[in-house]
Length: 87
Image: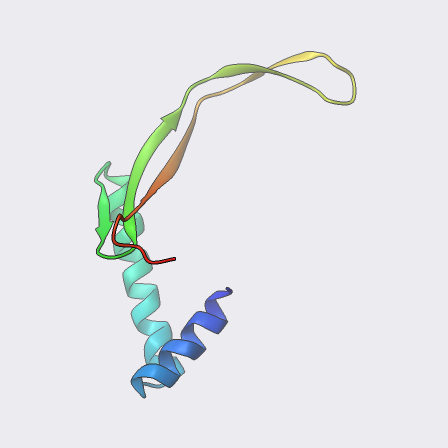
C-alpha cells in the first residue's frame, strides 16, 4: 500500500482532511527518524518495534565478473512485528 492510499484510507476513517493527515504523517515520520538516528528503538503498539542495527562488513561477488568485492558495514533498521498483529 502506498503512502497516498494509506492517507486516503485514514481520511475516510477519521473524517480528517488529507492535508491534516499529511502534516501529522510528516511529524510522526520525523520523530521516528530522529529516534532511530539517536540509536533508540521505536515501538508502535499493534504494529511492531523498529530497531536501528548495523549490518557487518562482508565480502561479496560482482555477479557479472565473479570478482570479489568488499561490502562496507551499513546502518539499517530492523522491524520486529508485534505479536498482537492480526494478519
